[in-house]
Image (tube, rainbow, N blue to C red; front, side):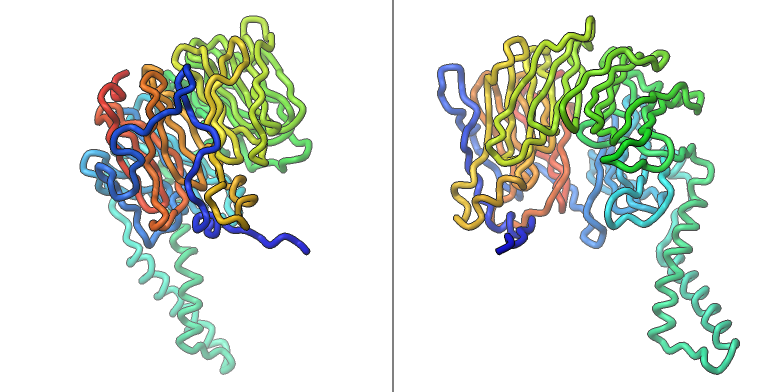
Amino acid sequence: MPRASYSSDEMSRDWVYAEERGFKAADGTPAAWAPGHPRVWGNECSKIPLPEELSFPGPVSLNSDTSLIAVAFGQDIHIFDTDNQESRQVLKGHVSRVDTLKFHPLEPNLLVSCNMNHMGGSTPAEPLIIFWDLDEEQQKPPESDTTLEILGTRAAAAVAEGLERLGSNWVLDNEERVCLSNGVVPVIANLNAKYLVRDNVRLEGRLNGSFQSEIFSHDGKYMIFQPGPRPKSNSVAPWNIDVWDISAKKARFSLLGHTDAVMWTGFSPDDKRIGTVSWDKTFRIWDAENGSLQYTFTSDGQNWTGRFSPDSQYFAGTTGSGDAFVWDLTDGAEIARLKSDTSGGQRWTRALSWSCDGKQLAVGGRGLGLLAIFDVATGEVVQERMLSAKNCPKESQSRVPSFLTISGARYLPGGKKIAYKTSGDNGLELYDFEENLKWRFAPDRKQNVVGGGGFFLLPKQGLIASVDGDAIRFWKLSSGDEEG
């Protein structure tokens, strides 16, 4: 018999947190919970409730001085103030779902966003990148959805009257008039959205926000984007990349050569190189000054994410087979091939983070929320955390693992701790390498587990925030985590 489908709602119902393998001290002592942990939703320091009437939250970005958070809901972008945790403004200009948004690394009021129209449920539209100056946006007169609805109703009434004048067969009842109005209002709203951003800098193209991509150079001068509509993936097609000069408002050069979906892009910390990762079995390193190709590294399948080392001397990339590679950028030599445990049933490795000293590499995978810490010099796993479905109902134990994915991992400033989030479980966790303690912020089984996004640090406030499906929750970090 064919296997019955298993939904994320069923997984949330069945999931009971347990570890197969966990972090431990050098002598083998298992990590202990920090005082007061694990903590569940409701015990956070504070939270920004996300409007229930809106669609599921999309991408989220924190600005450079940690004062503002941008959250995409469908084709609109909501800006929240982190101090009073209230809504500051709503940006309207996209006519399809916002797929990526990022704050500028140095200018706290400059935001860039894009709709790509490449996901199911997106309204058909040309891909569009919009630059937003939030101070300028606040000077624009506020738009009222009620006003647009009134205009839509009037337009629909005029159309209905015109139709009825065509002949006796055109007589619309109230239900038909409502249906006509419901069809007209979105058209007016889209026209209005385009009008609102007529003076904004706009590009026809796409931004890569997946798998911890970095679209801006660290000095804030340049931005990576992909021009035009999205080519077909899993085929052979040109996936070109442009580098945009933000102040000159023009493209500097193009990076040509990828022939399948580009999954990750980013600048090296010294802004001298650009890295790109693609399903065409290549990782490519480019000169950020002139766009010339410096290295092409290959794998045996689809590649997912990448990351430069803190000193810009090495590049790490991950594959769909569960492997991670490290290359020396002085000569292009492969110095490490890191193999992750794939017993969780899935091999994708999509999260990557270097330790602050560049000696270790954290690699997160799909399947039981695997997070492995590698010694780059030896290629050996020095720490590993993997979840277990052993406490779930027996009939679901074989189905749960593939839902548990490390969606993001990051060493905290100073390198003492690492933070990581597991989708499916929706838990945000931290581990202290020196104290051998672990923290956990997550829903309990009685709470409705709503899918969420990533997490980010607010060092000035000494907080870490988790982006959940119903709220952005702020949790207090212990003393020292806010440094750096």
